Image (cartoon, rainbow, N blue to C red; front, side):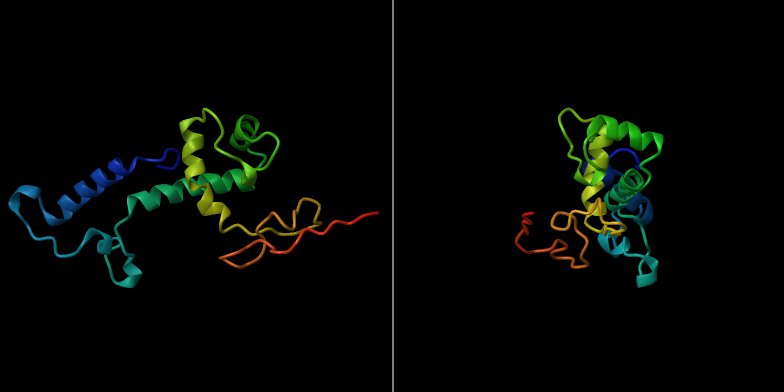
Length: 152
């Protein structure tokens, strides 16, 4: 689950097996006392805390995307950079033509990671003020103003 995006049908089938185990088999006509989505609410909120497998799968893939974004010197990061985004960063990477299944899976979770990422400005050389989302506004994290042209 941390490398491949599971099809929704597979996640649903696994959840059905878990549901049958919890509530009994489908042939004994047992009563389902709570809906499955209610059982997936965490224990801290008073439910049983079963995993929503699709959300868990995307979270695990998001962990891989985070590693590609932060550990740029790792072997996997360098291989993916050379193959899929040689002239940009992971943040600007696209799925591209003929992607591998692992890359397509990581790109499915990319939006989860990049929507929550904020930049540390540092020396400012690699920060694009109008293009990078560095404001803490969930609705619009980019600066909304006209581009300034400086003529020397």
